[in-house]
Length: 361
Image (cartoon, rainbow, N blue to C red; front, side, top):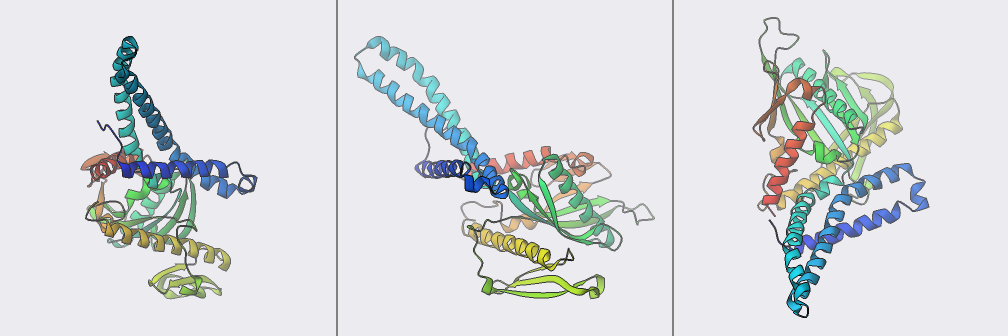
């Protein structure tokens, strides 16, 4: 059991405590209370910080009491009082050590907890029509899970497959702990099942890829609009043909990086532009985060955000009714998971990642 906090951790904890106090002050500001979107955003961040700040406060109190007891024990002015202090010290030291372990576990996930909005992109991979059906099933799985968590879901874009499902689906999901829960869903999801189009009853293997991007705040990412080329076109359907005569589709290109976004989900040019900018900011922010993670890769390998997340992470075996997560080496009930009851799987992933981060401290 840890006996003291490292100096670097103390500096980080003091920084988080300052953030918590600042958020608490803002949430009683009448100007902030008038904006319900801002209240929700700040409340998510404050609630994420509250457990670690409370644990740190309790640990500091324990350390202060321990210092007082040790002073009494070494003072020698009152032998009876010194003996009482001696008896209390081990129990209080054990409590302080337990709080330190709790703080460390909370601290390694603290930044994740404060992210209250993500972009989830699901794309059909290998497998033709079946891959599109599979991408559609995955999209519904995340929507059901979000509903169970009482998160807000907004469909930014949806491109249907020729025989159902989705070639591409982009969701914006907002809620408490949304990045902590969904951040490790990124990667290739493989399915083994008999497709509805298979007359011989043979099992096929298809894939879909998932990207999960934390949505940045204005203060976290600044984009010079002069760097973004915007083009307005008519929406296009399969094969490239125009599906309407009014120019409503928005195509953004961030010229310094080459990152592109196309949005044609609605018939409103203004709505498509707003959604395109949301997605562009998220993709650029993820790129920025990935570059920062790459610089720390030697010290903290395989962390969330590295290229390793693009590998095959999970196989869904319908014949056996099992979901196998390859990072955990564990299996989960497929029917329950696809129905949106993903929490057992997600809890195991969070525990696995937390242990890995603690080992890197």
